[in-house]
Each structure stands twice: as C-alpha cells, then as structure tokens.
Image (cartoon, rainbow, N blue to C red; front, side):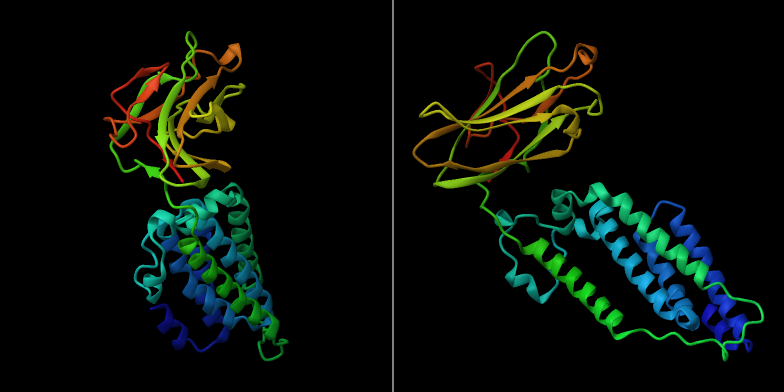
Length: 338
C-alpha cells in the first residue's frame, strides 16, 4: 500500500512525506521500546527508501546507517543472541563438512565468543550508537516545505564509503565463521548434559567450613585450558569480600598445579562459570583433584551470602563420587574440563 501511494503521488514532497512518516513511526517504536530483531526488518524498507529519496544528505545518511547497523549487529549478537546462539547456524551451508567436531570447538557460536571476550559488557554503548544514528537520520531526512529538489545540491556516495560497507560485511561474515569453527583443546571430561541439581552444601556457610573435592584422571598429557562449573548464588549482587577458591591438585606429588579465587558477587546465579586454567600441565600417570573452598565475606553480609555448587543427580562411574570434607556423596561434581 505504501509503495503504491509513493508511486501514485505526483508531488515529490508528498511522496517523501509518505515514506518519512512510515520510517518515523517505526524508528520511534524501535528506538524507544525494547529492541527485537524482527522489528528491525520492518524498519529497513522504509529506511532504504527514505535515504534514497533524500539526495541532499545521501552520503551522510548512508554513513549513519552503516554505523548504526554495525552497532546493532554487535549489540544483538552479544546481548540477546537469538539466532547467534544456535550451535547449528552454519549446518545448512556448504561449510558444514568443514566444521570441526563439537568437542574441540572453542566457542561454538558467535554469542558465546562475544560473551567470553566481554563485548556484552558494552552492549548499552552499541545500543546507544544505533539509536543515535537512526535519530540523526530522522532529523536530516525530514521533508521541508516548499523545497525544490531540482535546485538542491545532489550528494553522492563516495567510493570509500561503498568499500567500507563491503569491508564491514566481509568482517562480520568472517567473524561468524570464525566463532563457529575456532578450535581448542579436546574436552577431557564433561557431564554437562547429565541431570543435575544444586547441592545442600554452602561454600560460605556461616557456621562451618567445607571442602568439596572431585578426583579426575586424564587419559593423555595436555595443557588445561578451561574448567566449567555451575553455582546457585541467589544473592550474587552484594557488597562484601566473599570468595570461592578453586584449586587443582596433583595427588600423586601433592602439588597444587592451579589455584584462583573468584569474587562471589561475580558468579551469576544458575549460569555456567568458565575458569581459565592458564595451561596447567597434566599427564596420564598421575591422579588429580578439583578442590573447592570458600572465604567468607564481611560480617554484615553473613547469613545472606550462601553459595552452592551443582552436583549431578547420581554418581558418574567414570570419575566417581564427589567428597565433602572427605566424606563421599552419592553424586559427582557437575563440571567440564578441557
């Protein structure tokens, strides 16, 4: 209907106004409400027509659209994810046969890669850039009364801008392919697909100290890259100095080969926690143990800072029981290590 109205009108200003009103309504709707990907698809036809019929600021509007679209792509891929969370996004392409086995994928999706890099922490900046760019296009493209397009100076798109758009498209395409095909160490052990639930042992218990241990044996010599755990941490936002301590011990030589402390307020509730293991070396001859302890926070926060690690619902025969203060439980630690 809009296209027909645009063609049927005789006066140039009337044509521009029809397109501008549609673009104005959708842009205001998208920029002042929570953004959904499919809404952008509804905006784009009016955006493109609006840019092309306003030749006075053609190159400026194209530049703003390029910046805004790039910013929105990064915002959407790092914050909401949607299609970029899908681990099988590339499976329908000719590249399917070149995608490595899932057990050695470093990220597995663009969303995971951007989350790991920490781009999601700047999502609000990218969202602001997108909104600002589109609002400026609205201002520059507003139809002016009694304007004569024939006397207006025509703006042309520079070759550099066109090459920049091609470069951005190539960059984003390469980024997607890299995020789905980048590899790392094979997974040494995982039970992340097992049924799991939170344990009843708080690492930050006010009255008692707990040590949770899980033995593990590696089948080959390797450098460890990453450990994944999961915690129930309902009060993750609090002002205290509580810590969760993670160690890996070589039981054969009684040496701690890795240790780190993680602030309790940085551990998200019910979400997997990825811990970099700094290339700690292990071999097949020795027995190893993952050891978890807690360091309590300030007195003000005690009684409110309980944090619980996840166990599998039943014992995993491959690695055996998890132990709490040396006592074997009927579960195993819920984790993945590579």
